[in-house]
Length: 337
Ligand code: SF4
Image (cartoon, rainbow, N blue to C red; front, side, top):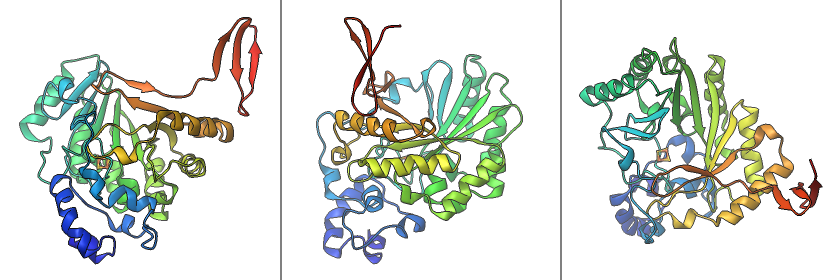
């Protein structure tokens, strides 16, 4: 908290109360993100994502420490197997930043366990024994916190499993700590026998700094396929113009917009959630104004972890004569095919 005071993001008076938040949830902001925060704007969207507030201590009854119930689908430490053809490996517990809306906020942070040694061997053996597993998703924490050596070892160990064809890394590092995405690290993500995908997490167009753009370009240059992940957040990107610039920013960098997540029911995050109907209205706005390439799917991980539900608004309704389809200006058109 002293660092946030020193950087003018928290007053010394507030720091005393915020120690209670920091005692429960990890706090970290990278120099790149610090450099983006407008100190004169208390509503700054970058600040809102990383600087703790007392609202995080307000927990509602529907919120849960494990909102998508990873634990119920975790047969081994660090491995989540929810869908038959893919597994998640939580390879590290640390991140370069700690997002105040993080759905794994009760698990991530310094001092958590990394997937190494016997636990990693067991996880790889689990994947090896199940030919239906087509894709391995590396998450955490942020798996781009691995050293290039460990990233290479992990990629090669997964690539050596014949039936695994896709390795997908989920990361916020290219945006919040782009200096970590070195040429050596990028090479470490690739191995013969698997196709590497990287899902880049960004929530506001200002996050596409020149350094972030260069980090993403380095991944594209070695042939890595890139998709986006964003969280729809009150006070960060809950405006059509911001979402338009965010999705256009991804597409311009060769990152296909993939998921726009409705925030999960993580503890103390109610101030970030907006009504789903409002999210759908924003999605209609994107559909009306952006190229098809820039359209994400609006999704909700259903509490309990059963599945990821698409929340996209409907453009089709059944009518007496057949079907009706909604255009971008809000008018319905009959279809009799
Ligand atoms: S980078 Fe991802 S895992 Fe880490 S705190 Fe942010 S949302 Fe959570």
